[in-house]
Length: 90
Image (cartoon, rainbow, N blue to C red; front, top):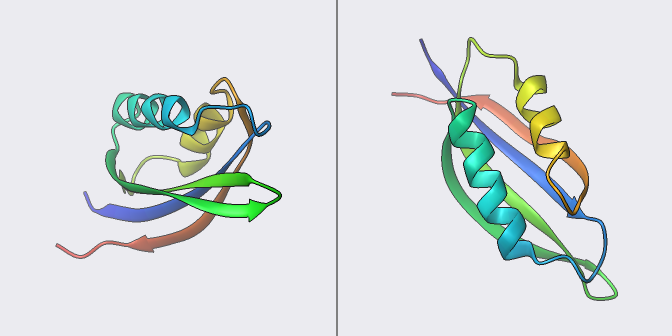
């Protein structure tokens, strides 16, 4: 059972969304779905809007689309886009 290294770009619904609150919810969802949260970074998009970029390890045998759908349901999240997916070594 291998692990995949995955990155998601999570866009908030607006400027008033607390990214720290979204980050806590993302960590919880990842853990519940069997993944391991790696790190996150706020990336400026435009006009003060920031996206949350999240990296994680996820079991290869699980469907990544299920995790993506669960992240999409988090309050304050507008969209979720997988930006990188690769097999992790080790």
